[in-house]
Length: 239
Image 1: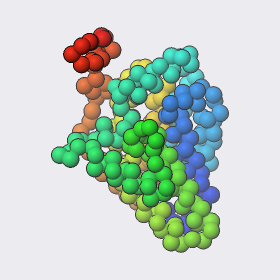
Image 2 (image 1 turned 60 degrees about the vertical axis):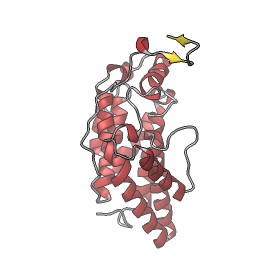
Image 3 (image 1 turned 120 degrees about the vertical axis):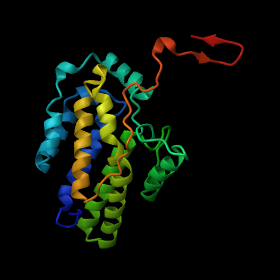
Image 4 (image 1 turned 45 degrees about the vertical axis):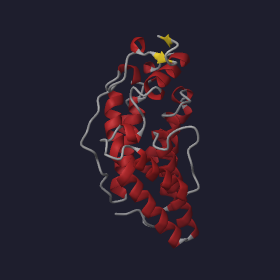
């Protein structure tokens, strides 16, 4: 069943909060993984929503998996920021003749419709897409609370299309790649929770995500640190 008034504005607001918390936990501020408050808030909202499947994944998280703060931040940069397990939609779906440009333009178009844009990064980052799902879900909750039928229908259509064409079609593959890397064990329960919650969102909105057929392996075509050469033209090479 598509989310309508039968899903209350309060329930939708809770789902919007879940998307926002997942974005925080997978973002550059790795302190969110260690502070306990963000994870606790996420667990509480998932329990309130009855998202038992997502909770099973989140319950695999353990503080014992966490290294010190500096090491944790370094791992985020090494594996996510440097693209070893790229957290971008365009890096986790099959390539097309047009490359990733049309896909990025489509994602950016969704954001623009809500007055949102991504600064300093690509629009298809997992954090940006989770934040957008939070925004559109909260907007739908607000429209329902105000009795805005047209606004509700607009939010429903946009959310369904974004789950079908974007966030729902690549998150499972990315999470599988995260799970292949021991250094990323602290993030894996949160990433798996995100993927399961997006699946739940797809069922709730009655859409089938357009999954690609290509599964990339972790560290796909990325050189080890010792093999990387930074070039500044013919004049110098710094290994």
